[in-house]
Image 1 (cartoon, rainbow, N blue to C red):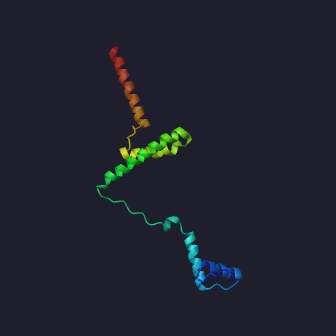
Image 2 (cartoon, helix red, strand yellow; image 1 turned 180 degrees about the horizontal axis):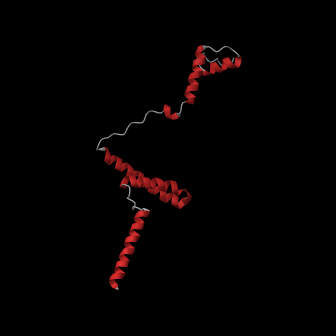
Image 3 (cartoon, helix red, strand yellow; image 1 turned 30 degrees about the horizontal axis):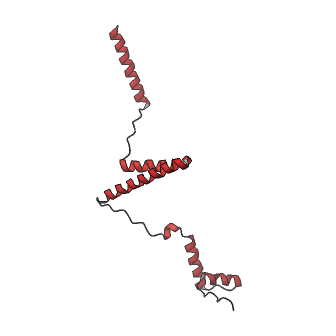
Length: 137
């Protein structure tokens, strides 16, 4: 006494039809097509949709608390990994920097002067030196 045959309309019955050289009925063909569609579907497509963030003013405090928690967690991870395996610090340092900037706000980098601005400053300094030498003589 063997195992019972899978009923038509299942993937197993579809494979049995192929294996035995039998004609494939519509129910088995549909079951096989549905199985292939599910196999090709990405995990993101089957995941439930993400809930959009709320735009309430009350959430700003919660968001700040979350960022503070992230910064503290990354700080702990940073010090732990620095002791164990310093070669793995770079990705954590980038995340830590971006989390700190999100919490505190980005620090304004000093503006670099263009070449034209540098030349103008050099000319003004040279003219000032020439005037001071002319007045001293």
